[in-house]
Image (cartoon, rainbow over all chains, first blue to last red; front, side):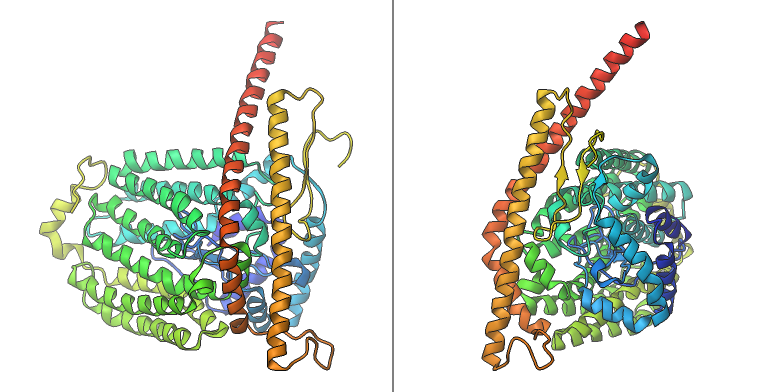
Length: 440
Length: 147
């Protein structure tokens, strides 16, 4: 959390008080998740789902279900920060977010925001020299790589690593997380590089570095290469080739499949869901060196989760999508959009039940996770039936805490390694620098 | 932008296209490669501006027409008693968004192809220019060190 805070502060120096305000608001709203492996505070005040579906940490947009923090349009003189939940999902409409925030804020707080907002919008209306100042570079690169989204993606990968039935190897864990993070930065940067005119036209994304001319496209590509190449090399050589291959594949899937597909066909949502599902699989293969049922189950959970998350988010962004030319289910096939969201909520229940069957968790996991899975399914059903802004928002917000909680419960119900000691010796020898890859 | 500046300047987003215009700096000793880059960027900027300004205006206009026709069908006026503009809710607008997206699909496909091509070309040219400048600087450095 502190890490995220610090990055935020370096990136957006002129609005520190807004951030504090947002943190307060977010805390009030009870939208803070803690991962068992590291403390991360994700502040969600408004969610903008950008076009990229998943905040794919690796691949970019779709992969991570976290939204980037974004500022709402200045004309309203109210700045809302939106943490990206899913990279792929479009941001919620401003009106709904604004209303949402109004409910949450007191008048005094709004006053605090107005001054910084006015200052910022004035600054934004001026002509700026396109010169790169080195002191701005870290902030710019953080925004270019969607650092918060990347952090979320890395945490899902860590969850995959933690769930693997092998003794915990710190070096491997650190290398895998670092490699995944670098790959995610690369993918996110390329995504932004491809989407400049479209990002300019969508409220959620119009303050990105390339859109604002703070960095040149060449530099963005070089940065992506300098993150992606070492990231994948680190995964391939420092962890194992399977993880490296998955990382490279995910980058490709996100930048070359998902990003262009967003404008061509609604199938992009499914591709994006895969992008989001791969990081935990990578975490698992980093630990065990093999792609077994547990990895696929974890990937499956993340995959299914993407749909209620994104579809609910995209419901409020239909106008921006329509104008921007993005082919999203919420615009072209609204009925399908809601059906798919509900279907996958129910699938989560099934997948949670499959976890003990595959020896990943004990039988307490499906029992404990049943209430939250039922709740999200209930909201999914409400969204399916009502098809309105409030049900979509409820489903979206639920998905934000549902995933971290599910992963946390999963970890606490993890099948003890000691119980699988016989199998453990076999598995333990396969992770780390093992060049052998056991594939099913 | 001030006359003494040696960089490009980028302005606030355009009202219609939402794109930020760039005023390109023309260095006195501009090489042919650099000129090609600048012209490519200017052309891309002009095309983007043209496309989005037209597209966004068409969107706004068609949206107004849609609202008007729907309100008329419901028997309501564009503005109610208080003078506020009447709007339709999100579900009613969904039909319009669906329609607008499918109508403009081909246009977007064409634009996407153009944009990707232009983006790659410009970035590649930028790379070439950067490389040329780096080599020039290295040669200049070597000459100075020699002296």
